[in-house]
Image (cartoon, rainbow, N blue to C red; front, side):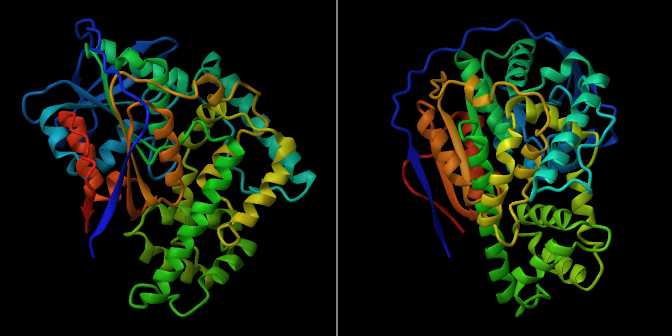
Length: 463
């Protein structure tokens, strides 16, 4: 069956201005030390920015290069981490969706300040403690969450120093511009996914004259208040689980829970846990499986069936993926710099999230990340540091799937209304991210980054 992709144009007028010239390139590239880098002919470098040193990776164009395209996935399968490590694990998949861009442009990735090979945030105390509840039911629960968050912060701050207060998306956007200047690029052509797309929004706000071909895929919307973001994600994940349950019931050859009440199975595991895992950790693992539509759904059915029978071995790797340190804890320094949390509102919000997601429980990656900011110092939220409407120098392409299990497509349409000259493409597909789950959207992204060609207003067909 062929389905249609909706393409909409924001109503703001666009004024395109020439990007100013930049300085000559000032980066020394050398072969990367990682063995996996050889297959991509990748080169590595470091540059110093204001307050941090950044690790860079460049995949040269296979033909004559027209300049760099910057990429930031912010770990589509978990929390923010090393861009370089992520690419070296998933490079074949990534490049297969960007064939024109790979031919015509160098693809450049930078580990964000605080993570990977860049100046690190050091956190001796892990942010994840299975004994600390994810959803507070009592004032004592809220007190434990707040105390643990404060302890994590103070340990991180003591080990890291001043960097701990300067790791948010504003600083990361300024880092991107410093890299652009160091590479001699007159503008920033950029593909950001998930929180990486949120970074693209902040870049367009802070450096509009240098904003080139920006693509924001499965965007996180910085203008959505924290509480609403948690609720939106809870609704999206619950809906994704409902689609999974329907698929399971109609696909008995792939799902051993076919014919059973799949929601009741998750309810039982969420209430009592599974061997070696708390109920909250079971739900986090389920959320990770849901991000991997469609290839991970058979695995989710089997993992829930075996966990129900007393073996959580197929859920445990997804829990480990989520809470891998140092990335998991260090990434909270970035999240909490932009999203302060109010303990007084936590219990009431937890009630609303539970009601929005009766099976998945509202314990999404979004909830977990923002919950962990409870007990961290108050600061200005990102929405207060970014103007409500943006006018970058070049058009912005915003892409999403209609049924993203964590970042609802309403965030993409909201961004399109706020960014002058933007174009939004929402594919009627499931899964986290249009680049990975909608071939037509991937083709549109590739064409825009490589040649500046935006999708036409005609409807675009996908299989």
